[in-house]
Image (tube, rainbow, N blue to C red; front, side, top):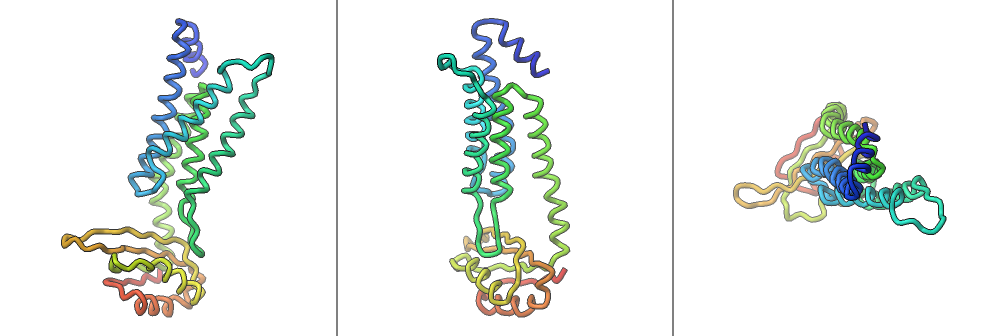
Length: 237
């Protein structure tokens, strides 16, 4: 199917090649946009624009490596260009990863950026079916499998607390206390919510390692003493 589409546009007219390039770039932007929208809608810094730009850039590089202007008698090697793109996007994705003590955030977003680079390369090579399948699989993973992750995480001890939005060192205090009490935090989620009165509140959920169960009570008590939360709940499993 992909070859039929490419041959059709390559043979219809002198502008057929330009139309094909346009289709490849649009597909790269569309597929990456769907993934980027999912990231943006969930409040991640690297969202719609970042994913589209990465995919379109990778697509353009692949197009140039395959059918761009020649350089004398030099032999083209699109695979080598693609390998360089993958490496470069890996460094870009690393910029979205944040590590704070035992907590690491941004791995999924880094993976989606890297994936969009691959989708862009596939579109640039005219491999539309592969790009479509990769997009569908990734969206299913991001939207449906998150429910499985949530179900698994609920089997681990959790602490849910609400603190005043004016407190600026909340996460730092949490990480310091987790180190002091040797409590391993598997995941930390923080959302800034505005109340009807206009006050800001941090809604924080900590998912803890089961191996830390012996120290959780002491850890929770010290959290309450230091952060003075508006609301505090401890779920042991």
